[in-house]
Image (cartoon, rainbow, N blue to C red; front, side, top):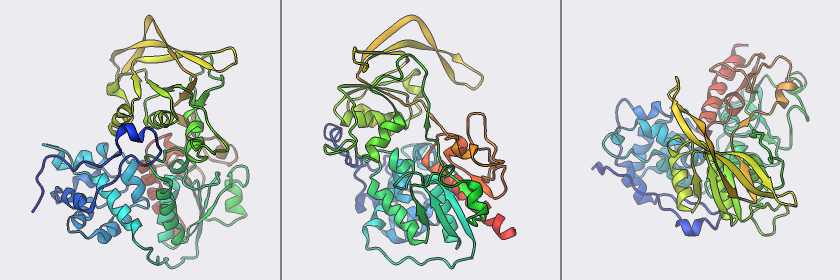
Length: 461
């Protein structure tokens, strides 16, 4: 019998006053009973509107139908036909604005919890004994992927499944890109990321870490000297932006990238860490995206009183509603319509406070978005000994500056068509390196599109 409840099964979570003091995963996952009950809410629509909202085109109704019958292994097979990272996507994708936003059940109630079901299926699979992986027959062609973040891993996985000899080049000492250095353990345990990467290695994907393309080796050398027939650039957008206000160079001011990398990759939150990080007693995070929420929640777990300063209202916050809700539950204070103008210092050159201009919204412009404008003469001062800037990132210019014939946008993004083809023959690009900072699943979608185009290019040569 279908489950016609208008509300979804709640996700079990750690209590806020417990989880804001540890780095263990907040969401605990569905039980088998909860997953089956939630799956029975799906109407299995013939026209599959949810699939149109999925950047990697997972056959959502089919996998959910298998969950409803308790066939979790079959559900996993369906998901992994389209997605290389289901345990990751089930945790960090903004399903509420993608597949779930198209769900018919959401018209008169809550949408089916597609993301939670994807996570359940992936976690169930990962808890089973490892089954031998059947490698595809080699097709004799060799391609390279630059960057082991979501777009690079998606491209590598799809190309490996087609029989290509795939080598991924990663600048850091641990693969995973933003999945490893950017997203905190309490949202995405690193053991989950490693498990997904191990699955790609089992398909034959090789990963070379500590390789900075543009310094260790160039794109041109990979093609001309190492024999790679095509290259995918998925190097992300790791160059932080700043506001260029007085005091940004003081001790105690971090980019969100540095702050999160030291916590996630170097485990700076551990007492015996060799690279400890100071969040102080009062931390101010500037920005309103998911990265700002991650930085704020990390600072809270390091013992600070945390303020998020955002120049628009709560209605304009770009972060996921779930992340905002979790941050509020954990005791983080939001200061809306507030824009930093100066960071002051104490006598030792450390952050002392943040001076902010109060803002108000103008009438919406042609794009429909209201612009924040200063409220004349209205300022507030927030005491702080740590400031974390989370106002966006740009692609690193290193690859562009060392690759002949690779065209980029003025702001640094690589110019590529809808299939990922760049201005350089045989070189494709996707994810944040092309679009600027976006979501994991959009990056994966770009990696998959590029893989299909690279395959066609090589086969037609």
